[in-house]
Length: 277
Ligand code: UDP
Image (cartoon, rainbow, N blue to C red):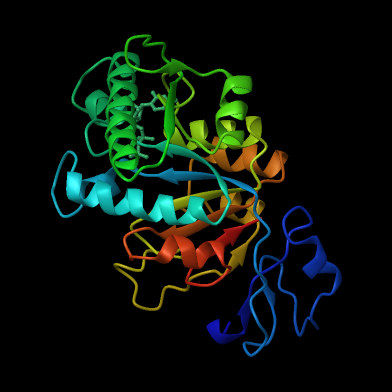
């Protein structure tokens, strides 16, 4: 299918107006909708988003850990997005420090290793909080594993209040239970906080039908539906996270956060991205 004709599919929740006005559909494939390239991309009507960053983007060009310079760059992106009036919830993974599965593969007890992974996400949340506050952005960290001296516990009503006051709320420790990941944590918080979309900032610019690193003909989807992602096991997020978003009608926008200014572009409905809806 020629990429040039792939087009952004409007969801009833985010893009109702555009859906109604909808441009002539030249052809409708089961999982993608096409329309002419010359027509303008609709601006998403987000008021509140959940931005999920995988831990590895905090590494910058390092092999491990946190690169404060790169985190500062990410913080600037978040600040610019917030300056448009958007309410922002953040979830950051922990893969740059520790993943439970990796520990389990080396013989550790899985649950124990997962608790270590959750602690890694708290470290990343604190690093991002520091970077945002250095940019003058007010923040609160809420952790699903209670740590009173370090941050608040997850309290939805309090998080609501923070957002109303213009604070960025960083949710740490995923869902607070082993055998989950921060993708599930992100989907859960996006549903709980009634976010208009879950934006997943990663190192790749969307979802491909096969691995673009090994297959030069891999095709990137502009839009793809939840069930295709699940049935074809497309590597986007955990199945539980995708299912939670599907059941709550939350679009997942996958884009590269490594490209400077890309978050703002994606929020304007521009830039390279894949929307799961
Ligand atoms: N984790 C967990 N429960 C959660 C969230 C995270 O046990 O609800 C652990 C799990 O071990 C995971 C690690 O924390 O591997 C780091 O999170 P994740 O792998 O999602 O980080 P990312 O890949 O996004 O950097």
